[in-house]
Length: 483
Image (cartoon, rainbow, N blue to C red; front, side, top):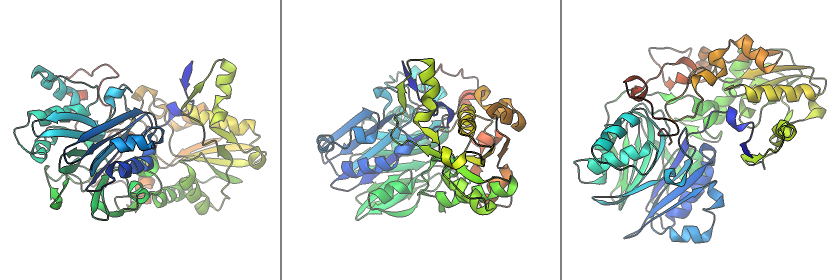
């Protein structure tokens, strides 16, 4: 049977990535390159919509960007000087072609396309209201709610309709939308999800991360502010404010794991942030050992920081096979048991007889950590100490990250000592909340002056969870929350 790789069900999922460009003769090709750089944010599907003088074209595909959008024939069909694109990981919904973004519709003003990173926390409530009004939904993604709200809006222009629509939704979102003559970017009022503005010659770009600007040779201009709408058209770049100011609660897990390490988030290098987190982790939870070993690849920067602070040598005690797909055939229990080595393998020569500190970004269900500790033991490690560069993940995310149900989160069910026993490490430690905030430039976590969303660690949800708490029965999986 076809089964998900054993490492893939024990990581928080990377939401989605968006990209849009205005006024470039090779808009679709530039968008495809940008999506390549954002592939880490979603590997299940991709799409590009392009706009020409009188043409509107869209291409959707399951799988990776390069499997479809590297073909000259595909890019050749996407004519026009405007385009938006999306890479998708479905946070809960169906992974089917009808849910692949950008979502497209013919509205009163003409063709329209929309790409969304995040989750709407009142989408089920709005969907039921819209269905009662006669709206016919074609997908199971929460993003389609915005399309219907725009269709019913009183305003005439795409910008006016977008403003009316986003004022009715709750949740975390970065949107990139396009209609003939206009590309629009919107960020939620708290700025939970990232969105940046870039410039390529005379063209402007809106995208999730600066690494997508780098790959196309564009310059970073600035972050789109929380609660800001940026409009790109023939008159230039316009900034609008559809929402009341509410401060800033950027997702702190972008720094820990989600973003590419070569991106700049909110003015901070992700790579440097992860190293600083690793240093703080070493100060808080030092232990005598021979080597600091990262769990590839996400644990590498934090492990470098840990090694630098502790003075313990950094070594690649685990080697990752970069050529493994997300699925493979597991015909027998024996092959299934060996499957862990398809993606990671212990570097026996380095670790045999040694005391090792494994550094990883998180523990979700705990199954991956247990397998890696077992792998180290089997390779002859004398001691195995696990250090985690995030606090215990004890609460689900409702803002665009695919977390398991709370009952399946190991940190929700077990104490740190019980987790240590479960993964069978000699010791286990997580960075503290205050330590995480110190690494990010604060003296401690101040509940009265928070700069980040850390709900997955604290249960402190900064945006109303309307669909969870206001008497709306959650739609059965896999409906909604799919962007």
